[in-house]
Amino acid sequence: MAQYDLTSVLAQHLDRHLVFPLLEFLGSKGTYAEKDIEAAKLALIEKTNMVDYAVDIYQQLNQTDEVPESLRQRRVEVVARLKSLEAAVKPITEFLSEEGNVKLLKQDKAQNMAFLQKEFGIGPDQIDALYHFAKWNFECGNYSAAAEYLYHYRTLSTNPERTISSLWGKVAADVLLQEFGPAMDDVLKLKELLDVDTFAPVAKQLQQKAWLMHWSLFVFFNHENGLNALIDLFMQDRYLTAIQLTSQHLLRYLAVAVVVNKRRRNVLNDLKRVVAQEAYEYSDPVTEFVRCLFVEYDFEGAQEQLAKCEEVLDGDFFLVAAKDAFMEAARQFLFENYCRLHQAISIKSLSEKLNLGEEATEKWIVNLIRNARLNAKIDSKAGTVVMQTQTQSAYEQLLERSRGLGLRTIDLSNASLAFAGVAPQTVAPLSQHSAPLAPAAFSSAQVRWSQCACSGDISLPPPTKVVVEYSPADVDAFIAFADAVEEEFQGIIVDGVEVDGPPHSFDVKMEDGQLVFSRAAESSSSSSSLPEYSDLFARLRQAGLQAATA
Image (cartoon, helix red, strand yellow):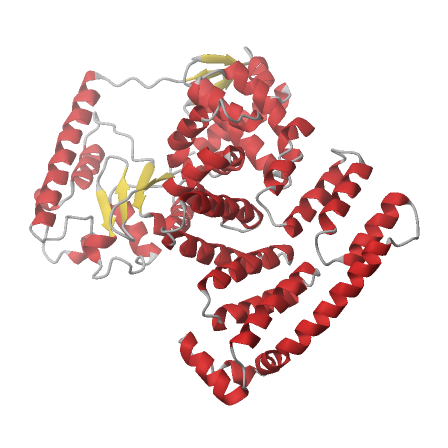
């Protein structure tokens, strides 16, 4: 589907070396004629120092063994320049080749410069030559040498502009070497440097942020925590502004990351808003699926766009690996939203909307109901999915309202205690109490479950959800904790809410708002690690949490 191919748009924000993998991908997919792909490669590579590669492409494209005089002369110039740079950097490369010498370097760059000048005769000229030598190696396609030299240059250079430039080169070299772990670290360092450069012209700031988001696509879609990092970066106000002003096409990648990542559904509302605002400027089947389903609630339109999404993702270099995960998550979103508006749904109709066969649709719905604990059943005779509605009696409604009043009282009490410098009340294991407890010593949840156990006419369901409020810096900690809870308590859902509170805040609550754990209240340092999961599991059980029955 060439009309949705973004290669030409992405290439405007990428180093030319990073464009080669995209062209190779297009060639393997047959999106364009092979001759056009080879011509594009040749036009791109002629501007680099990879002369031998350019000769190979030229000969293949023109079906000849001749070497153009321009490329022959270019090769002579490249080799001569490379030898000249090798001679200029020989003192510093010899110094760096000795591991013991590298250990002599300190954190202070000025002190290192004085030390190198005095002991080894290495001055600013040799440091600058190392930068040019690394860049020349990169242009020649020797990415491993370029990455190593750029790393050493950054540790020695006192030139801030070239330090940033060398970091850009290091990111590109790591990506082309498929070293995505170091590349992720370099992307985060580069982001920090760009964020503090607030005095640069606005146009330059927007351009650099757009470059960073485009380059980081290589890392985010090949790193184990890449989707979270993509959402964190793209959803920051400054970077979201850059997307809206210069790079609206990046909404495709943001939409896929949000739809696929079930842990980050808290940013879905922000995504809907941005996609709706920029629909006049940019749209493709992925963004249109989000707009139709979540903004317009147009199920027919969403179904039509979803059918196109598979082909679009299959032809996208960055998204092809996420195609199956996106289609599965998108079908689930479509099913969940459709079910909210209908009491009985024909499986045949649903199979058409989900682009699946009837039998596959029925199996898919069974697994979804079992895993997501949806209140529905399948009527095999009628061929329908029947949504069940839960109605509360007047007595249950009264209990629910009373429980809400009690919880608000507890929240108010905790707020007052926090203002007075006293730790808020949390659920503690019963073994910590040395004396028999009066009813008032129990939490509201403990009293409620004891009443349910003793009274035959009160039947409240146990909690099925845990809510975690965490700071942006603790996304990884939340994901690990949520996975552990859902594994320990089968059938329980853990929802995350990213808050802009104190750094490293981490509060665990029941679905009714009852506080189970607060890092800020229980730790002397807000950045301290979480307690052992076994301790948190004990607190959750004390609050009434238990594995859901099948």
